[in-house]
Image (cartoon, rainbow, N blue to C red; front, top):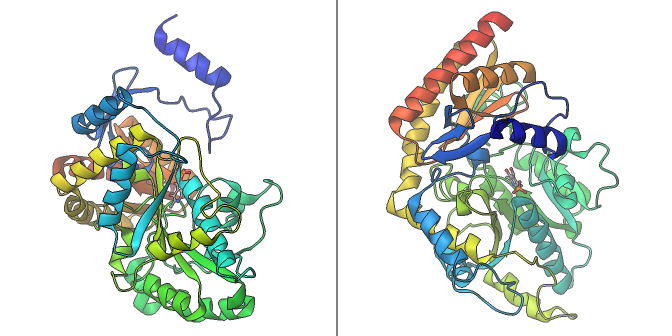
Length: 441
Ligand code: PLP
């Protein structure tokens, strides 16, 4: 029995794959290594990764700077719980994140995943209102099509039945804002002619709930798992204004968009500025470029300071053993160095425009509903989930990996992708779409 067969059997018998049907007839890829924008499987086949893992491999695979930083830290002090001590990489990373965000976003709590960051951000928002004497402010508003993670509170923030059904009683205190997308065309190109939900209906909803009951608004700048939905310009600004008017905190989930993905360092920068910034920002995927699990919840300095008045601890009653794991923080510092040194934010904007222009030609195909995106976060919306799966499989057979979220194929490669790789990826995807739509539609 060769080693590959052993891996497949072990996988079939014992590994539970998340977000994946158990009876999948398709043989799973066994990935064994990666380099730059490519990964290789156990048969030696090479694939261009147009999905950056799951939007996290921002600086590509086997990056020597990151690998070196990671192994150096692991060989020195791999981790320590940050409750009582600090470590060099954790302190330095918190400082670095503060330098990247507009003040007063200056204080970071570390956790391990995007979902944990959501849980912590919501807890911080509600506890802050509690400390401020506003106990009734407990409701969290979020876009109906948003995605903020798989844990209980995070699931409660989305209205998608696929994520909620059968998961048992979800926590109370959540309401959903109409997603700022056009149900008809779904595309950013038609906004002048359509009614995309915004401040008017959101304010009505806030008044119906009673602003005195609302703790926070939690949104992604570009909706990721919800299908690469790019809200029209100004929507975050409108939410900022509503939060100011009604005393709610604005939490921006930059788990997918943070650290360059949209062509700006943070996705909110397309809409907000230092004078009108979020109150809390969560980041994860791009923070370590996928080299280690890590997430960050960065809050305004005064929100942090208020926790000194928490009656039971005089601090935050929350944390995880490996939140701020030293090795993960060292990897993050190296990733941020690479992003800065290689101007990867500008590269994401350039490559993103190139890829979007190439992929937008697909809108001529009958089975393609829409192609939209911002920076290197592009969605090709197919007419059905089946069609999207067919295209994804055909692209994989031709050596290109994309990520399907329902009917939307997500094209979100490493920010390090070259112009040639982007062109080749777009060609393969175009052929796959053309083949599938000619046959299937
Ligand atoms: N928030 C956003 C915007 C995401 O895209 C995701 C994951 O895709 C999460 C939160 C949850 O992150 P994780 O899968 O690390 O728990």
